[in-house]
Image (cartoon, rainbow, N blue to C red):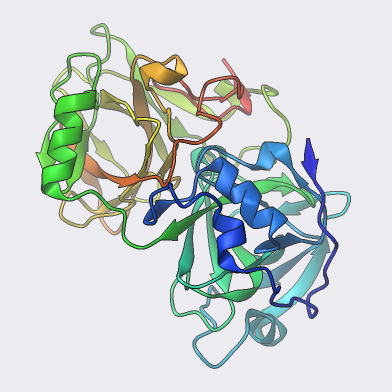
Length: 392
């Protein structure tokens, strides 16, 4: 199914006359919370989410919308935020060095920064806000990507009532990648109010729904769930992670199961002493000790970086969808795959070390589709796993 929208250009966004209630639908839904898939569809029909190309059904996830790259990538000499007095286009005009036409595909080189206007735009009714994260497959390729909006002072956060274009800042960190118009690297969640669970509510959810289903001890810290490293694996010499090789071939992100993993990754086997050193500017794929579950009426987000747990960034792709690892979606708990990059200094990590935290939020309603159930989700019931582009 495709939801077809009237094309709009860069300068002819407008505020529709459709009242917010028409987009929100049934008042029996919770007023506060993350918008589920059916309400995302309602926002599209109500022209609160617009696009210059038809929005496909496959873009609509249980609690988020996949965003697509537009026609042109601009190589810029630095990352930036436009600030309250400038549009992103004004900053592109000031900083752009050259353009890349993505209609037939183009290469974004490792170590450089690019700005790409997205096909989707927003006309959010107040008090609806939005926030973005990289998709899992982008994070596992070490593609550092964030969404920017006009006159913004932060990445990935879209203010309530925002009306305008969306842009992706993209910086491949380890591999050069080939992308094209329509490539999906980012995803967007819509939120009304503050639906994050309190410490008390999270503990009640853990008691009722068992957020870990494999016997691993879940530890809660305030209103967050701790995620720790598994560096022991299932056997003494088991593979417990991967380190990216350097100077590899370009990866076409549209190719699934195409690249031999051994050409791009070095396996890491369980260290005899239970730990090893993360080297500065190397990129690692590791897994959590816990197998977590996200109930159908909730969503979760990994806190991407916390200096209290070490000098490294964990998990670029922060969204965990409703149904991830849950029995209702055919799961028995799924391990969190962690994209880890140390900063500044080498850092020693060991088995069981806390490296990240999950924040749970309520949905306004149970989505009409769940992660892993009839969706062909790539990472349901996962253990340690590379991105979908590689074959073992």
